[in-house]
Length: 599
Image 1: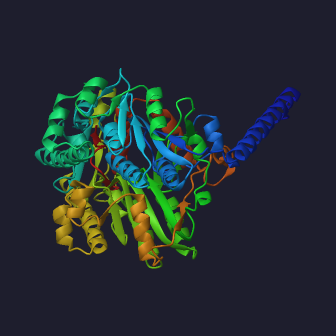
Image 2: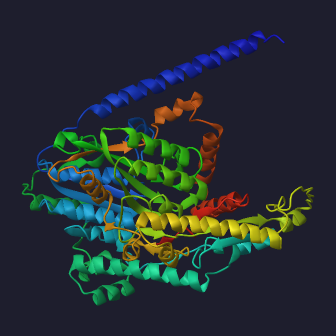
Image 3: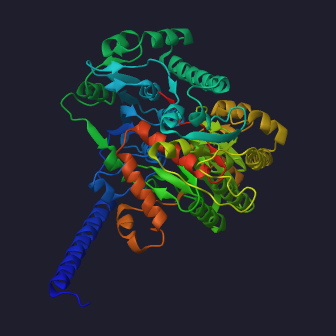
């Protein structure tokens, strides 16, 4: 049928409008790229003003267009790079940290503290300012020379609390039975669905984790504020504090407004009272390249970022640093780094609670192949557990912060039995089968005894493969790995004590170790090559016809957009519901048993 004249006109007009929009977007991108390439002018005797807030994903590319639309989240790697530059930049004589309810985990908080302490070796002061200081905010601040809170501000150093969510009650109400099997005494991923409260084993290692983290928290404060451990514990028990009370208790150095803190800095830096303090904003200073200050030069070391749940297929990158680790994408990146002769070593930065067992194994093999050509060092971020540990275990060296969450060497699988839900809504179904175990994953029936035996046999073989590979990678007997495995979650400190981790430290430490393994002289600097680079805003906009923009990627982005509008606890509930849904087809899941929230 011929197209009407009116429809043709409408299509032509729509095409013209879309073309104009594209031209405008491209023009804006070009303008902002040009602006971003200009180096800002940094005055002598300047104070670098940095803000620490939000989730602080490990890496987010600097994208001028994202900044234009307000979608440029701060990353940990950017923050640490700022401090490295400021340490050697003679124009920067001090740093002011505005710490505002950081959502980074405890390991990232330790890494920030380490970077602050390293900066202070230059002799330049670091001042911390907090309007409301929560546990992690204060822990970071204690690495600074001085801490200030405004007079109406408060300090909530009230101690650590861990909470775990259970869904069994909700599933009962919906008529859903979780027919779940898990390998390992402590592998409590299934407990979220099968229990309404912690089992004794679950509670045992939660307490062990909390004791370790709390001990580090108390010791860090005691050392920084020159107090005894017992005094700090009493101060925590008596919290929260007003700014004045915190000052009197010796927890902070002053109850001052921000402009008064700037006056303090002016005195410290030798300014005249009538002079304005030279402030270098973090957003401007980010445009000062490391190379211009003599950093990030020399032999190349690939830094491969792997963050999020491990899945088969392609990785996804969220605007707020929310990502998934796709086995296809990560293997491609590792192979590129392996085959690039200019790259002397690979550092794999992992921030993942695990995910698909199959995808984890495919990534493990890529690392095994890469090791045959050049050193591979793993740097653990906040979490590298279960599948996250699986893809780390065969590296030449593993580096973690003492507060990193790791281990969880175990496996879980099963299916949701939704017959009760079907009965509730009046739905019936019927299966016609061929094959003894053809009905194993029926959603309306529990495993039969023969099916359960077969499924458990499969799960045990999967767990045996897991501990065998960890044993090989860590040069330990499989029986020993089983003894410290069993699904138990460890801190980085406990992991090092048990041989799962080699060294304490963050990404900088991992790069130093990779440099040594690559036989790069100690007095030579290295160049960090970030891989893979997440797509820029413009690349995402233009990727409609690209192979990477496949149906699964589009679906993942749509789901992420929908989930981002929901409360955090509901998002996590749906995330684990997806985990159970994946397991219903027999997929082995190497997943940390819960999202450990310690605040």
